[in-house]
Amino acid sequence: MAGIDPDSRVADGRGMPAWCTYRDAARQEQVLKEASEVELPPQATEYQNSPLRVFGEHDEGTLAQMRNCMAVGNVVAGTICADGHLGYAQPVGGVIAYEGQISISGVGFDIGCGNMAIRLDTPFAAIQDRVPAIIRDVARIISFGIGRTNDERVEHELLDDAEAWRMSDREDYRSKAATQLGTVGSGNHYVDLMRDEEGFVWVGVHFGSRGLGHSSATKYLKAAGGKDGMNGPPAVINEDSEIGQRYIAAMELAGRYAYAGREWVCERVRKIIGGNVTDGVHNHHNYAWRERHGDRDLWVVRKGATPAFPGQRGFVGGSMGDDAVIIEGVDGDEARSSLYSTVHGAGRLFGRKEAKRRFQRDEMERWLQERGVVLIGADLDESPMAYRRLPEVLAHHSASIKVLHTLRPVAVAMAGANEFDPFKD
Image (tube, rainbow, N blue to C red; front, side, top):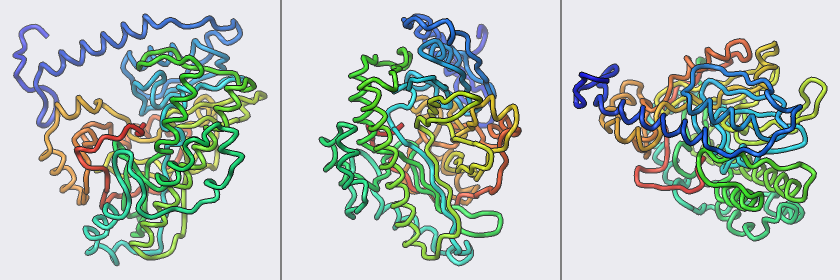
């Protein structure tokens, strides 16, 4: 970097001050240092050096974090999807298969975070003039932001499943969970209005299990002796231990809760728009599944990764200004090596704080105006410039998935710029 004016602008487009690259290099060096200093417990010989499949290009900090994860517990295989980046104890976009074990930190704090999309029989042309009014109604009726409760009480059988709450040892959160069901939160959580190639309206949502998942992860991480920090060792527990059984029950409860919340929000938005549902796609991307791979039954922990078994569909969003897709898994060697997993989004290029330092609000608004997207809420940390481009990310997985629909966003509702949400992923 010698001889470069720190205040000169580098990179494409508007660019950024050259001194930003100095900070990036220093941060990367610090991340690698922290990863190298993590104290990892011994790993049984039979699970050492298990295969790791890497899709796309990643910074060294992300790769180092994933290698640390692969060195703890009964790891059989792992993969990093092309949208991967540094995460809490395990990269977002990281997938690990364990034999007889599960990683609490691998699933993460937003248990059951995922995407749902529904297609309506409503032509976009029929609502085109009403899009701004519709998305304002969505933002008014659906609750976004910190620790919010739902103004409309949601009745769901999950709330009456006493055995599920008892087995997970989460009866203490049951009444609060009832008030939060159907809330979206903040960060990268959203409600989208989109249109497909045939001109029909789609509704897409992205959020998870809210305070129930966050408090459950916190409870069991503490019980398992998990350590704070991005580069702490993964908290891996045996499936047949008492804490393992309790955590699995809590994870499953939070997963059901996340599904119920997304279903309610999609239906509530449908009522605002009108029309009938003609198709739907729904999936978690922060969860652990019991799956058969080869001749072994394994726990597959996906953190920011979409299950993509042959014939299985998923909804993958881009940034707020980019197209989303409905994908379907296809079989093959690449699919098997990915543990039948694919991207959950475009993937971050810059963290939240860095995005706010680099970009301007008018840049973000110009991007959205050029794409014809109406935005309610959001801040610069969710700017499209902070993300990779989804088609480039998907290209790295082209042998294991196919795109069924491309969905063009027309309106997005998110929490406002000053909202903080402790429950986001």
